[in-house]
Length: 137
Image (tube, rainbow, N blue to C red; front, side, top):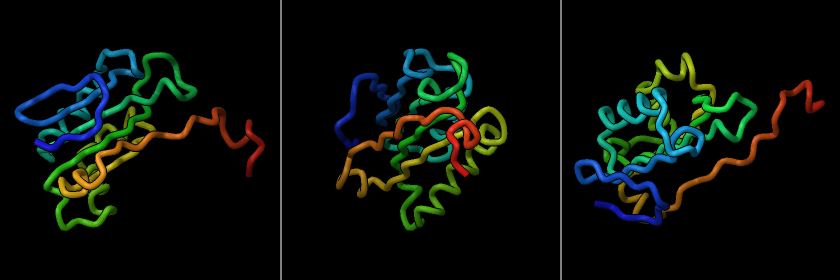
């Protein structure tokens, strides 16, 4: 099993490392988050899977499941370009992306890439509002 600098909330499933911060960091996993996790585990057999519901940092009602960040380490990504990896994740989560999920940040790595750099990306803070309320074109 691969190791890295991961935070609390680790779940070991069939020799794989999984991490979830729960719905908007509350510790509870919502139905959309659970569906995303299940589909990615089934399609990619990841060695590392981190799923973060970042909805709480955006202008959405409490408990929303609209903004996610996923880090996936899978041998299925071997020989694929970053674009092809993202397309594979998008195809796996097509139903969620067509419905409740508004934003999905993807970090897709091979096991070798993860061993070289086991750091997880973070999302920038939400600016809130929209183009009209921020006064940008």
